[in-house]
Length: 338
Image (tube, rainbow, N blue to C red):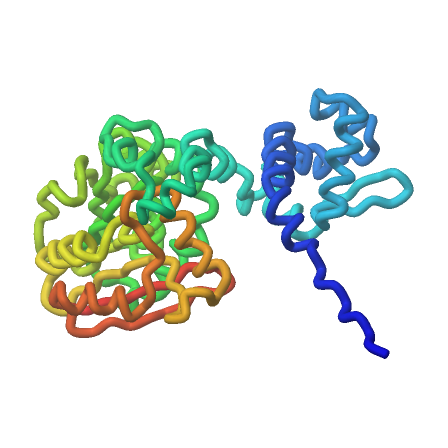
């Protein structure tokens, strides 16, 4: 007598197919400030609904959804935030990450996934290429404002890994500065550092506002334009290349890093921040899955392995390239010395 083999669990397939439902629910929760209103002391469906300006039925379904996901707890009809939600989804705390929804779930970003089949066939997106290189595009302004909170841990990590004496004078170039937090955190860590931020002029307004708000505006200088075209100047101690190389093919990255090398003093450092998967390209998960983001969002970008990035930097003239993971984030540093 033979025994039938147990059937494989189809739940992962169902979760993949319905993933858009859960992300839509999350976007709604952020827009209604569900987690913030609960943090403010609204515990019952009626109180939360009143605070959010929504129906009691709608709030009950939404709050129960995030109780199932572990973002909330529910006892005797009252809701509380989980530790994760209290840390990252309450607008009143400095670690709030909800603003990232404005960019990650924007219509422009979702458009690349609507033609992901085409991107797979082409080896890259045909949708985002022009907009991402348009100096007047509002996309990167939205990115700079929305993604800033998510980048603070990495920015602090960069400042702590530079390895200079605290009072040393430093000339620092911040390429594709965006929100400016990478250069700003270096300026806060090193009181004699002068930061030169490169980005489109409209994006630099965000970086400049943040620099003044965080007390380093007098040491934060602007170089508007494309990183591929503008004159960086020379004699930099440090060049920050943060979340930039993954948008381009390897040859373009190598040429950019050669330009970076030329801008550095002898012995200067290029600090590259990237999602760096292992050579197998399927681990760790966060780093590995970033390749899909680049396939959907860029014509030729990718999540590059350390060996690929190291070759780019060696071909650009860097003599030493050190890989520094930055857990618990999925981002890594590549510290390259001229």
